[in-house]
Length: 329
Image (cartoon, rainbow, N blue to C red; front, side, top):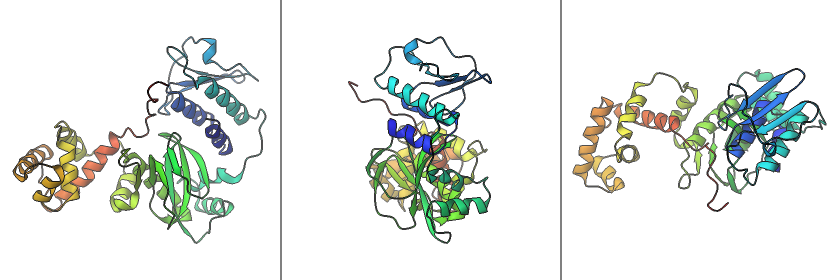
């Protein structure tokens, strides 16, 4: 918990990012109030702004006011064991963010510039050099939520970066990197330093395709150009094939059958992978074809099926939701 907020402070993350981190860690909305000038901000565990006035809260869910700044957790019911330390670190981070007791930051804040598409290429290259990266080198970005479990941690510049999905722990890796273990974690496509924003976006897609515990770490290289397309397609884009995949998913065997088809070259191979008779698999393919409106085994049908399947998984991904606490805690 302490290390998490230290990373956020080091990265000079804004107030909304700090609240998003606290809300994600606590599993409930977090709030902030500033007296002069008057400002109130509430953020949900998903990182979105919560409208309206904050509810009435017990004192145990509010950090003591300091320098006109107040933070709180909008907890319903009894306090959880980590609420006190979350409030303490959030209050300290917010005070530092607003110039109260600010300390020197190290150069890891440059990673936020390096992965931002809206920053000029010259600034991104300068940030890369400041991080000790070669201006002519090729790198990739690994992305993980703050609650990820690291069994073996890779070396490289790292920081916590605010995103629309909440704060993300990002690490720059060389093109060829030593194996490491983390779950959940996504590793992006290789790029030059001035294009690392694209590697970061593909790392986020790979992260959201994780399915722990079986697939805790996903490398974008597995999906190649499909990951590029997914990273560059707005999530609210009109995609009829993806909408029809919802009908396939209504069958208890639907998505597992699609996965078996995509992982094999024939109906018989897909049947063996799915653990059913090939005639059963053929019947399922007919049902999937009717639902999608095209033959998933003919011509571009397989490509359409793969893109629709991955897009459906992205839209339904729960990997960035804060996991439930272990039983008994």
